[in-house]
Length: 359
View 1 (cartoon, rainbow, N blue to C red):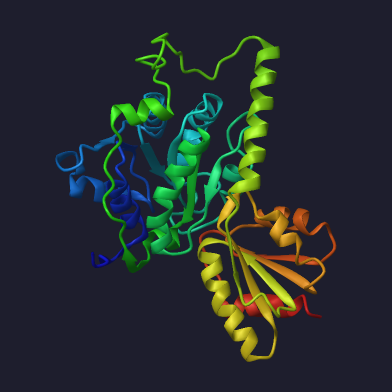
View 2 (view 1 turned 90 degrees about the vertical axis):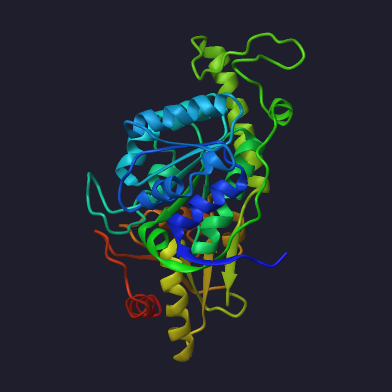
């Protein structure tokens, strides 16, 4: 079967990929710069073809709680928003993590704090990777750097979420969400049958398949000793994810004297900066985390005896740089360069900052 190549925005790619993956339900609320996700789903009318439910909730809080309910029934459900909207969803995300429910959340980041700007940003790294809601929980976090990865990460996010019974997030930014590129859309996958759902997920409404004993889906536990056991079990699961699900990309790192670490749109800018640097005889490589959590700390730490310095490039005041410094154990100088308020740096600006760490 010939590949189906389309020209579309990153947000549109997520919507099409969600339909083709066999998503059961999308519950969202409009906010710039991610509104095209829900708009595209409404235009495509998947309820007429695949049976997918698409609903604009009355608020972000309502949307995430609808995802909670759908996930409790073993369904493939998702939501999307942008920075302030994700802030409103944090309680529900924490509830899902505590109840060990799968689900996919998309965050197309914009500048903040507060309502901020509608321009792109990467300032939600702390909110997502460090667990923006309450409690000792983790979100599987994917950071696409292209429209193709926006589409690909829908299936990957859902698959990892169901594999570990843990919510997953696609953490992207306004640049990737709004830019247009060619994308190869995935083939259609059938929605799961009730038998398949029962095999991988207990249902709150039907109970466990063998006993039909009602199973209450909740994150509440009043007995502290049991809650501690739950949390210890969660931490063991997170360790397993860290051991098995790390993704990253290395570009021209083999002979690099210096390294740029960046994700999302900042990685796109940095890749051009590397080309400029090498034209001037500066050997620079790009290390791009694809999973922001689990962060590729072990792989990155391998460069502490190979490079002379590292520059992190982010559209924020310096957030991922903390994880980079932890990974390098202070064995290599690590500098940060970021633009704020929705401003995207140019490759030449990145090159200028890179030259500073060489002095």
